[in-house]
Image (cartoon, rainbow, N blue to C red):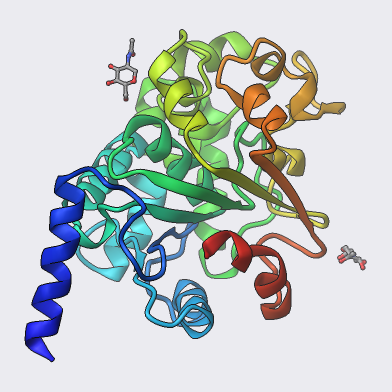
Length: 301
Ligand SMILES: *[C@@H]1O[C@H](CO)[C@@H](O)[C@H](O)[C@H]1NC(C)=O
Ligand SMILES: *[C@@H]1O[C@H](CO)[C@@H](O)[C@H](O)[C@H]1NC(C)=O
């Protein structure tokens, strides 16, 4: 088998050298980014997802991202590592992986959804084809009403930090969740001090590269959970948010300035049929195998 394998890799490198994205035969690879408090390879979460995909798409290469050198580090980094550094690290990993050079699909769970969008916007090579965001918070959060079971003590601590001052430099630099904390009563502070989300959402200026790169996705799929008790407000999973200045009424993406002014290319993408809004019954990240196969799998093929 060894000579065949080498030949395959050689063809792949040759094609990527010629810049022929998409010509490589075989299934499109998949890159997965886990959520808060999770890790790349938990057999009950990302490990399970990987298995499901491999079962349905034989021969697919699935890369479940590990941020750090161990599962523990990976989990800790989902709370404490600067998100911009995480995105940079992932961009490096993707750029160096010979199996991804013809392009890949990406699927992010919860905060992994907005992190992979940052990868799409900042790192166009290798090209991301479809982006599937499963419960990602694209306009941020203004609360964590519930937290994943095992990390509830960490969540209490996170809430305390965010209360003390989500937009202080000390908290921004140390706490991942502060970097996508979006206080609708303090939009100015958010715009000025958010290290991550305000940047990728074009709140700190207009980066045409972000727009161009995001628009080159084939599909941007956003899954929202109809009974989400972890994310406040759940409509952030469809890129909507609280109307500025209060925290009761929410507006859909289409009514946000980001869309109407088309600062990120989302309006153009929408009109081209590239935005897909999916609704899943149930709480945060609670999807059944059947629902996954029926609704998500088509975007991974
Ligand atoms: C826009 O984003 C690209 C990609 O991350 C970056 O290289 C560039 O410096 C950014 N430009 C500005 C003006 O921030
Ligand atoms: C939503 O959650 C509530 C409270 O846990 C529950 O009573 C209700 O049946 C759930 N609805 C759906 C559609 O899952």
